[in-house]
Length: 115
Image 1 (tube, rainbow, N blue to C red):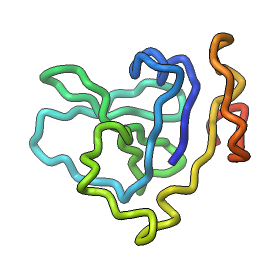
Image 2 (cartoon, one colour):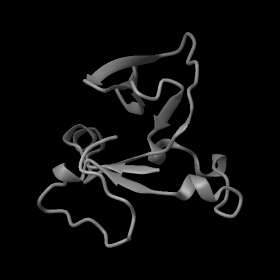
Image 3 (cartoon, helix red, strand yellow):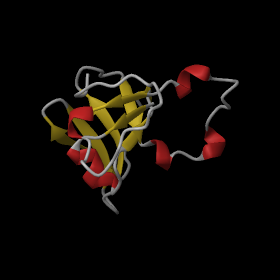
Image 4 (cartoon, rainbow, N blue to C red):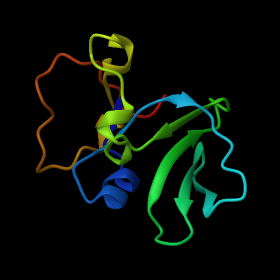
């Protein structure tokens, strides 16, 4: 999982950061979801009905989609014991952490920008 502190993620989530989790890219078919370019390096899937942002897709990772972790039903996720790799975490876009938020002293990797 990655915790992103960029201004776009903060504005879309209404929080200090947005948590994304990687999975294989899905074909949304004829749904109410549209892929919208939001940065020079990626796009986001957005619900046409309510406008909620559901995923981020990086140009450099065309076979991967990053759903918003808070939007995933807990029952759909494996347990920690079943899938340790899912729970590997990193902090990205740390150069844009809001001044009122202190990054946790959790020993997780930190990148100034998205990689």
